[in-house]
Length: 319
Image (cartoon, rainbow, N blue to C red; front, side):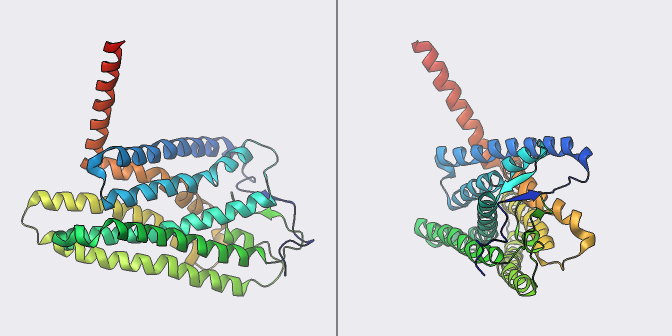
């Protein structure tokens, strides 16, 4: 059935926690603060990774991709959520819902693959240090990043199309904060078993397979680190890998809970909170995790601040 039919509403109502109006102000504050921190944190990582020559390495190239992805990821949902929380009409247009669904799904799928690529980079750096520059050359880094983005957007085209083909029969109340596949499938007035099976299969491909490969790579990494003679080398390796592993746990843990658990009415509100965690909280925490636990990034920040201070001082003295 064509998704642009008479049963398709012109706009959707995003219910969120509208049955708990006392949550509106706390949620607005949390969303706003998280979004501002996400913007500043990820922009800072992108700038420092590009401006500091010592960070022109594959690890920080992929970290820049992750920060750009998180910026777009949160921007696709949070501004609309803030508008709806502060409004009595918690609606989104059909076109806006389609755009939100496509972008959120594309970027989420891309992050699943990109985190796997980042673990491969750490595996080569620690387990094959003498061959690192040969293996992780610039062209391969570009190819791995491009493959992650292309696969994520291709998956979004498929899943968005399948979801939007479902007849809604006039249903327009989405029991969620934003347009996401599981929430939209619940609006359909026909059997969605086939769609749920397709969603489960693709979720296995984009969630379980990458996280399994990440765990395998980290098993080799831990073995290699424990064999290091230098205590400083072990600390540095565990520091950089620890940051990545925390991000992996936060993102995959919540996404797997959301997409691979059987649907249950009892877990409805819990599912909303889990979606908010991997859609808003994780992108906010990523810059903090990578900067607070990483001496190279903190050193680059200090160098840029000192450089900016010196340039400003020189500019004032000339004036």
